[in-house]
Length: 251
Image (cartoon, rainbow, N blue to C red; front, side):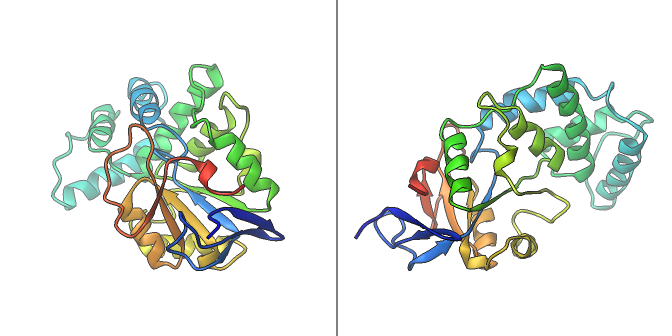
């Protein structure tokens, strides 16, 4: 069977074949993308963005951040965690959250502010895999609704895609979802996201490098595929198909 794709009005119709043998024929009208390990190398996040945020907490933290972090700190104590003692300028607590790789909305919002200053100064530029810009353009031309779902704040997502070496890629993106939508490992989060698309859940393809996220998305009715990129953490794909490049999706 032909494993390729062909365009049709309102989406790309994927025919069952070598790669997509798990699927019956279905029309793909929406694509939901993770960032880290999917559109962007993990090394950029951990070796560039996180260290930059860590080094610039003091000069970017404001009253609203401190108030939100205080609530987060109190919740951590109630939940039995052992965060650093609270201080008026809680840099140590912010660093602790980073060390724990916590998906705290207060932390993510602060990181977004810090990265904004970095992008504006020219110290930071967004990084994506080589296949991403051409895939975005191809999907956009085919009428595919492409959106992002990441634990990073919406601001951080927009900053990354607007400042790549291939130019501003936000023109190809129709929406952004972050921790305010819900945890990425819970099906209800994908139900909420699915309602934002102009199609049925089964016409949305979710791409991520984390199987638990794919499991949750599939439970909501979405199609799924595991991204296997250089530097990604090993995953057991289970019944999820795997891809190593966005060139495998769409002609």
